[in-house]
Length: 69
Picture 1 (tube, helix red, strand yellow):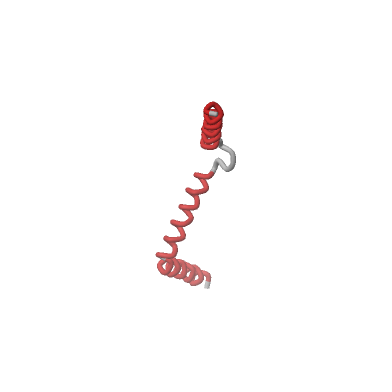
Picture 2 (cartoon, rainbow, N blue to C red):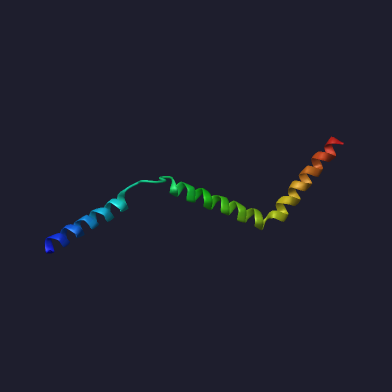
Protein backbone atom coordinates (compact mmCIF):
# COMPACT_ATOMS: atom_id res chain seq x y z
CA UNK A 1 0.00 0.00 0.00
CA UNK A 2 2.81 2.39 0.91
CA UNK A 3 4.60 1.55 -2.34
CA UNK A 4 1.45 2.38 -4.33
CA UNK A 5 1.09 5.75 -2.56
CA UNK A 6 4.75 6.46 -3.21
CA UNK A 7 4.33 5.69 -6.93
CA UNK A 8 1.25 7.93 -7.14
CA UNK A 9 3.11 10.79 -5.45
CA UNK A 10 5.99 10.41 -7.90
CA UNK A 11 3.55 10.43 -10.83
CA UNK A 12 1.84 13.52 -9.47
CA UNK A 13 5.17 15.30 -8.95
CA UNK A 14 6.23 14.45 -12.51
CA UNK A 15 2.93 15.75 -13.91
CA UNK A 16 3.21 19.00 -11.96
CA UNK A 17 6.82 19.46 -13.05
CA UNK A 18 5.87 18.75 -16.65
CA UNK A 19 3.03 21.27 -16.47
CA UNK A 20 5.29 23.98 -15.05
CA UNK A 21 8.09 23.45 -17.56
CA UNK A 22 6.16 22.72 -20.74
CA UNK A 23 5.87 25.50 -23.31
CA UNK A 24 2.67 24.48 -25.04
CA UNK A 25 0.45 27.32 -26.17
CA UNK A 26 1.30 30.91 -26.89
CA UNK A 27 4.97 31.66 -26.35
CA UNK A 28 4.54 35.34 -27.21
CA UNK A 29 2.39 36.04 -24.14
CA UNK A 30 4.87 38.52 -22.65
CA UNK A 31 5.12 40.39 -25.97
CA UNK A 32 1.35 40.66 -26.18
CA UNK A 33 1.19 42.03 -22.63
CA UNK A 34 3.89 44.62 -23.38
CA UNK A 35 2.06 45.81 -26.50
CA UNK A 36 -1.19 46.00 -24.54
CA UNK A 37 0.48 48.15 -21.86
CA UNK A 38 1.90 50.48 -24.54
CA UNK A 39 -1.50 50.85 -26.21
CA UNK A 40 -3.17 51.59 -22.88
CA UNK A 41 -0.50 54.19 -22.05
CA UNK A 42 -1.01 55.90 -25.42
CA UNK A 43 -4.77 55.89 -24.93
CA UNK A 44 -4.43 57.38 -21.44
CA UNK A 45 -2.09 60.06 -22.79
CA UNK A 46 -4.47 60.93 -25.58
CA UNK A 47 -7.40 61.13 -23.16
CA UNK A 48 -5.40 63.35 -20.83
CA UNK A 49 -4.16 65.74 -23.53
CA UNK A 50 -6.96 65.46 -26.09
CA UNK A 51 -7.93 69.14 -25.93
CA UNK A 52 -4.35 70.27 -26.57
CA UNK A 53 -3.83 67.74 -29.35
CA UNK A 54 -7.10 68.66 -31.07
CA UNK A 55 -6.48 72.41 -30.80
CA UNK A 56 -2.96 72.10 -32.27
CA UNK A 57 -4.22 69.85 -35.07
CA UNK A 58 -7.06 72.27 -35.80
CA UNK A 59 -4.73 75.27 -35.91
CA UNK A 60 -2.30 73.41 -38.20
CA UNK A 61 -5.18 72.41 -40.47
CA UNK A 62 -6.49 75.97 -40.56
CA UNK A 63 -3.01 77.29 -41.45
CA UNK A 64 -2.83 74.77 -44.26
CA UNK A 65 -6.24 75.80 -45.55
CA UNK A 66 -5.24 79.47 -45.27
CA UNK A 67 -2.19 78.86 -47.46
CA UNK A 68 -4.30 77.06 -50.06
CA UNK A 69 -6.70 80.02 -50.43
